[in-house]
Image (cartoon, rainbow, N blue to C red; front, side, top):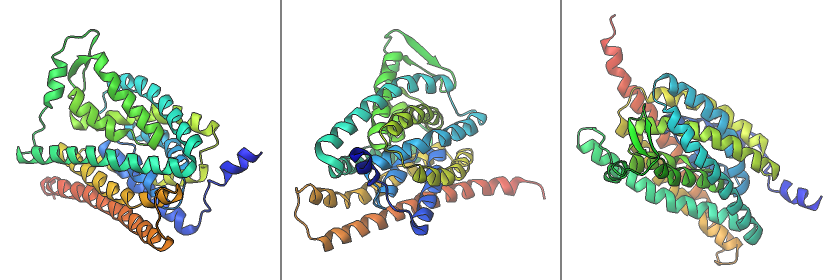
Length: 350
């Protein structure tokens, strides 16, 4: 009974304001998810944590909402011919193993350092990975833009595709032939991150693009298939640990289901480098936001001495920059869709 009560304390009290905020976060997370293929967790998890939701509950609830949303997004983009189903299932198999490893890591951290340690781990992971991956994706998008928007296969991917290490496998939609062994590290890393910090897409999508040589449009669509499989398996595991707050799950899912369809439609109107620009921009802003939340957790663990006033200011900056990231993401996606559709309207007969 004590253990159950202790876990129940982790669930926040919901107000109309926080529910509305979560719906908007869910909508923009879905918009981003449908557009760039990631589960949108790098928007949703920090968004929930900015309201005071613990890291583990945010991760678990986010993962639980992921699989129905990903299923709808994947189906939508499959109809546009953007999903490589074979690639998605192959990647999902190794990602499923990564999910199990990631959940064990998160439980070990929670048992040893408590909730503050888990929150610190989630935030540090977000900052480190978002800065590294976001900077590279943004740089690559800039290179694509300079070359006229033509996407080039990464040098690493070319080298790996040239290695004849059996079994070799061909993915028709992606038009990629590569050793099955080179798909495993990308899949496992995707699953581990999805289970530990609820983010797998921004490793999975760049991994498919830069390691395997999959076109970004196909990679972003296929990631939704992987997200569905990971989300279903991970949700069951987290639910058995009592970490899923079904209220949060349903609210962000309601917003996400609306956003993911709009985001998927947007991919049919924009050039591929725009997907990278959106991904890189949001990643860097969210990394900035999570960085301001780190002193709070260090203070709770006794690793930093800071008065409550300064902690409160940093928390407000973190929350404000999080909101800014949501607005910027929505403006870039909807703006690029509108700009791309204008020539279509102009060509239509009166």
